[in-house]
Length: 208
Ligand code: SF4
Ligand code: SF4
Image (cartoon, rainbow, N blue to C red; front, side, top):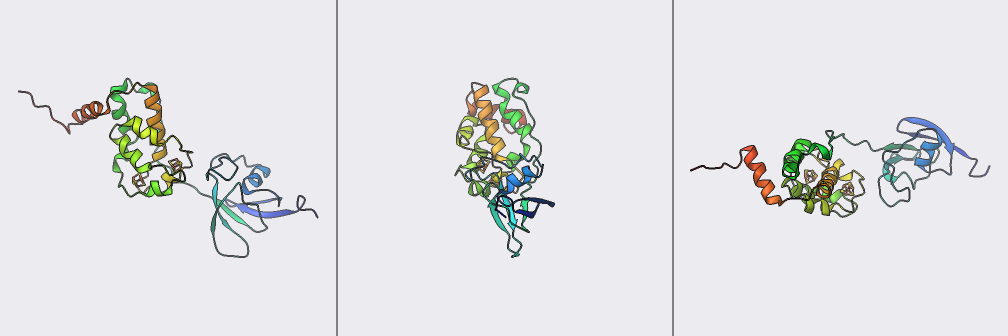
C-alpha cells in the first residue's frame, strides 16, 4: 500500500481518529472534520502557535512539537495546549471618551496587570525576543506608545500568557497599547499618569 493510502489511528485531545499517514497533526484534525483554528498559526513551522504535546506508542516520553510539522504515526497521542483563560478583556475603543481616560480604562480592563511580579517569565517565553515584561510595566504606567512599540512583532502565540503566574495577558496589553496609540493622539503620558493618581487618591492636591 502506498504511504498516501496507509491509514493510522491517532488520538488528538482525547478524540480517536483514523487518518492517512501523510498528514500533519493539524491536517489530520481537519481531515477528520474538526475545524480547529485556535492555536493554528502560519502552518510553515515558523510562528510556534501550534505547539502540541506528543507521545508516541513506543515510549512514555512526552515531547513538545509543532502540529503543522509533525506527521501522524500509528498510536500517537497528541494534546493541544490549553491555556488558562485569563479574565475577559472585552472593550471597544469607543467606550474610552478621550485620551485623558485611557489609563483609567486600561486599569479597568486589565486590573491584573499591576500585579506583575517582574518574574521575567513572559520575556523568557517569547519566541520573538520581545521585552514583554517591560511592555506590561510601561502600559501600567500609562506609557502606551512605548509599550505598543515593543509589541510590533508579536505573533499572538500566547506563550507569554501561559507563563504568567498572575494570569496577565501581556500580548493583549500590547495590543491595547497599540490600538489606543493609533486611535488617540496620545497626550503626555506623565500628565495622564498624574491625573490618574489624583483620581485614585494616591496623589493629594493640597489647597492653600
Ligand atoms: S504572544 Fe507573547 S510570547 Fe507570543 S510573540 Fe507575542 S509577546 Fe511574544
Ligand atoms: S510573566 Fe506575568 S508576572 Fe511575570 S513578568 Fe511577565 S507579566 Fe509580570
